[in-house]
Amino acid sequence: MSNLFFDEWDREVREAKIPVDQKEIEEIRVHEINLVTGDREFPDEARELIQCLIAVLGISVYRPTPMSLQSATTGGYSRLARELRAVFAEVATTRIETRFGVLTDNPCEILALRDAHDRGTV
Image (tube, rainbow, N blue to C red; front, side, top):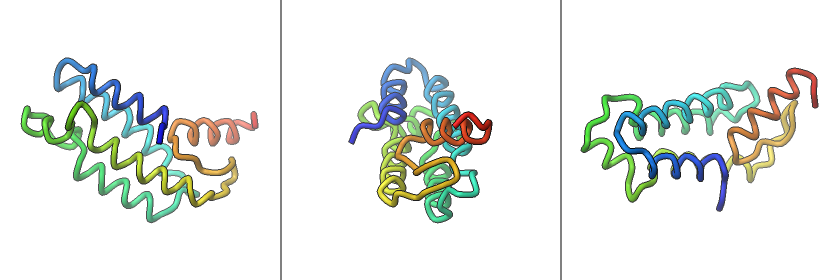
C-alpha cells in the first residue's frame, strides 16, 4: 500500500548519508505523528501502540550508533516507519469520523484537515 508520508520517509532514510541525518529525519516525522495522535479524537489504543513503537524502534530516543542504525534501518527502510504505516492503515480502515473529517492513513493529511478545520477554512 502506497502512502506518500511513509514513502517519503523511507526515501529520505535511503538517501541519508550520515547517522545524524537519519536521526533528524525520524525526529521530524515523529513530531508530525505526535501532533496527529495527540488530538482528542485519535483512537486511544492506536495512540498507545504508536507511542510504544516510537519508544522501542525509534533511533531518536537513544544516541545513534552504527549498530542501532543498522537495526533501525533494514534494507534502506526505517523499521519504525514500516510499523507505523501498518498502524495508520488500520486506523484508516475503521473510518473514524472526527470533527474535521474521516481519519486517513496519512498523518500529514490528517494534520492538514484538522488545522484547516480549526482555522475555519474547511
